[in-house]
Each structure stands twice: as C-alpha cells, then as structure tokens.
Image 1 (spheres, rainbow, N blue to C red):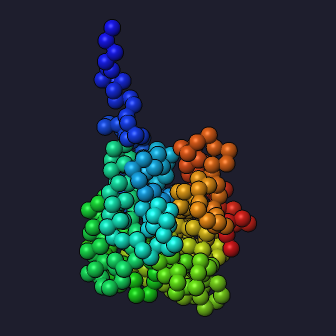
Image 2: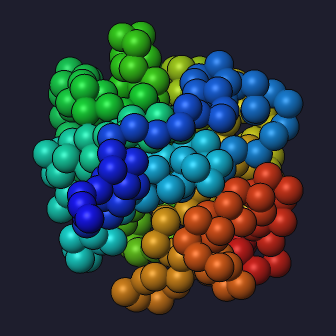
Image 3: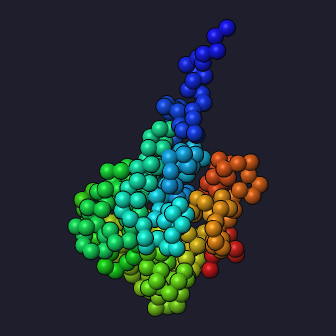
Length: 297
C-alpha cells in the first residue's frame, strides 16, 4: 500500500511552523485610514498590538487586532538591548517586511504601522522621507515618529507626500535619557499645557493617530475629546483614549524585567495565545481594559 501523502495532506501540515501557501479569504474589510476614521468617529475603541514576525502577525490579525505596530521596542524584546536607541533602520525594515509577509500569507486585513527608529528622521525632513520610504516599501501602511514641537513640520512634510503618520507624545522611549528615565509625562499645569499644544499642532499637521504613553488618564481623556481628527492610542494613559496598544510579549506575560504597571497579563485564564489575543481585543472594545485604578496614573 502506498504511503504517499495526498495533496491535501501535504498542505495541511507545514514544517517549522511555516504558514500554508494559501488561506481562507478575510472575514472583515481591510483596515484603512477611512475605516479607522469611521471607528474613531462612532466611538468604537481601536485595538493595537506590537508584532515583530510573520506568525504572530497572522495570529493577531485572526484574533481581530485592527492595528499592528512594528515597534522599535523590538530592540529590547527581541534583541536584548537596554533601550530602543540602538535599533537601526535596516532592523526595522527587516521586521516590517516579515510582519507584512505574514499578513499577506493569510490575507490579513490589519493596518500596519512601523516605527521610524532613533536617528532616522531627526536630521531633516528629507532624511525622514527617505527612511519612511524604506519602511513603506517593506509593507508598512503608516510610519510612527516620536516627539512634538520640531517634529510637526516633519509630519506635515510626510503627509503632504502621501505617507500616513502616527505621532507619539508623553513618554518617548527614544529620548528616555533626556527625560531622566521611564516617568509619567504631562504632570502639572505647565507640562500638560505643552503636551496639549504639541498634540493640537500634530493633528493640524496631518497626523492621523497619536500614541499617548504614560500620560495622566484625565489629561489623555481631555486630549482625546479635543482631537476630533486624530485617534489617540493609549499605553499607560487610561481608558479614555480612542484605542489601546500594548507590547505583545508584555500582554502574554513575557518580560525579561519588571512588568509595567499599565500591563495586564491576558494569558491568565486563556486557553492559549490566540484566545489571549482575542480576550485583549474584547477588553479594549468593551472598555474593561485598561482599568484606571490599576493601569493608569
């Protein structure tokens, strides 16, 4: 009797966890800037997670995560660096390409954002354009950059040239040394006023999304109400933002150091990683995560 595999058997199992060459058509519409704007306009929370490889990208997409961020946090999570400062543009290109391929292989529909790493956009607007082009050609739909003030004109320059931009205020990890460590930002009237001014300027420059990291919950909620054309995405900024983001490994309970206050371990009570990711999406959507008493300032 022949033991040769049938075509169906051969494609059912693939080596080393690789994805099959074909998958079922997507069950949701692809995420786009207009679709994200619709979610924001009707008050539906946006679920975002980091992703650094093809397989986790595919699993997160299947779980209903709307936005995947190829964050320069990969320097700490994947490379063991002490901060994000050492991450290079080539490293970001490599991981963006990997995540993009994972989404394509499963006909994924998530919106893909990639971080511009430290040193890849500070020199000039033209440098930022060259760096953003590298990430967009690797499969990103949007790039993210950190900081306010001087970044406003860089954001405007990129948006005018067809590159969607996500801004990032509050704790900006690329400048952690200048900030004196991983501290809550926007505390006090003067700091809050400056953050408000920078957020409004970034929206006016065309930023479609704005990550608010380690910002007092009340301030983040007020900013969210004021920024009608820019969806705020919180991480340690309370439940009042338009959406939430966490580092994938953190929300799965995997961390080489101390777990940040704003993290919830979604593996608790979950049957596996896909179930944990789906639980995260549900918790963001129904507003049960974050809990301001536990995860915010």
